[in-house]
Length: 129
Image 1: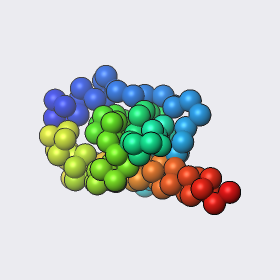
Image 2: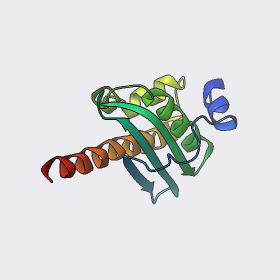
Image 3: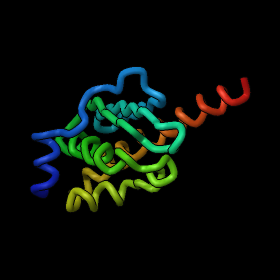
């Protein structure tokens, strides 16, 4: 049912926890399955690049694996590059997900997008002050 890569990211999640004093926070949830994710990012403002990214996820194995994978894919990327990380990209990086678990990859990529949006909203406020 799950690929080896999914099982590896579930059993050995990368970047678990929370970035201290995050520059952006993305919180998403899926009432259908009860998965809840919080993704926090630290951004190098000069390079517009994600220096650090961490997640906290309450959910199934696929939700944890996709959260772990999305942080691996985003770390070191520019914000624009990270915004290109779609649910399809996450699922492919994990070697595929069962159709009934695709919503988990959607949550993980949505959480990252919300963290980036949060960062950009905060950054825009700083520039206008």
